[in-house]
Length: 72
Image (cartoon, rainbow, N blue to C red; front, top):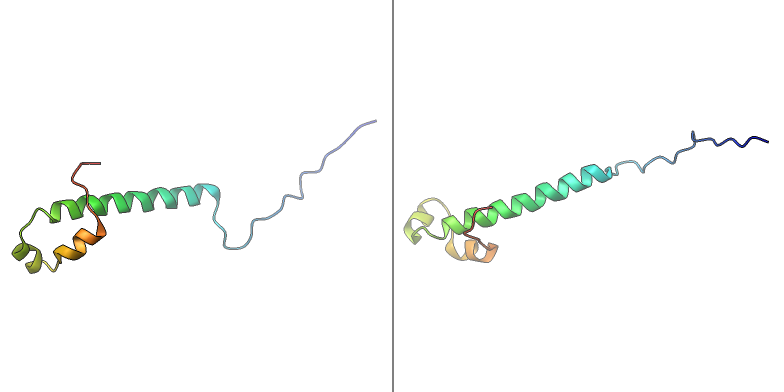
């Protein structure tokens, strides 16, 4: 007696859903963007208020967004 299995009935993903790999990449890119933003904010906070104002930055907004001064 032989047993056969049919693998042609694989459930399809829901329309519009991303693959596991795509979601992982999106999350990694998002985390990296936040890390870069903190690093840039850390540098900008070393500048004086006049330079920040000339370039359209607000010190309080940069401090609120968070910063880090260590390289990634």
